Image 1 (cartoon, rainbow, N blue to C red):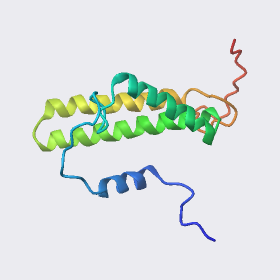
Image 2: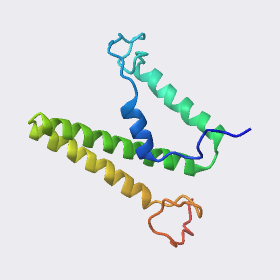
Image 3: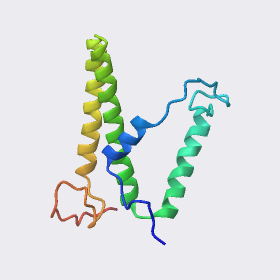
Image 4: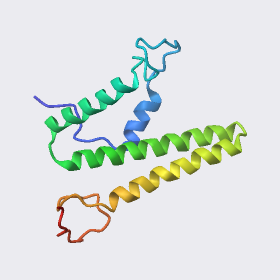
Length: 139
């Protein structure tokens, strides 16, 4: 039996799928008591969900590279989203707002740069200091 599931997706492919996804015209009231998501999660529920998702991800891969790549992916997505909002603001003649969104996009780029300067082991392919020897004492 052959699988039609690809081995990987590029971030551009994922963004294209997201851009083409149908948008519901109905706005729904959150079902919970908080402001987060359609579910109306509270701050505590949101933070509990984050912990649960992180813990469950370790069942799929218990290497810290998983979480580093998740952090990089999230920073990249946030940066792209900020770029997109900045462009929408520019299109609407809101140059001050566009500049603010663009500055924040740059901050996400800085987050990515910092993460890529921190090695978490010999197999860290994201480290931009390839060949750097990390015999640090982590006491």
